[in-house]
Image (cartoon, rainbow, N blue to C red; front, side, top):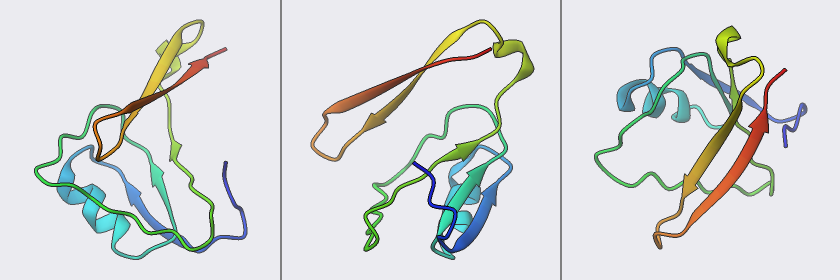
Length: 87
């Protein structure tokens, strides 16, 4: 869920750990304009006091008509999946 009143932070334009950490450093919402997987060398802990979490990313036009999964893996190893159907 996106909180439009939330503070603005950074943009991840290159899908790598350095760009993600730079975008997170300002706090607030982070927008993803890259496509791909980011492999982390260490755990990132995000403490939210607002109760809102948001991920904004740009999708590929070629994804039209496909179903994609977002996989969120927590520190305890559990995975949570969200499926998206693209038009």
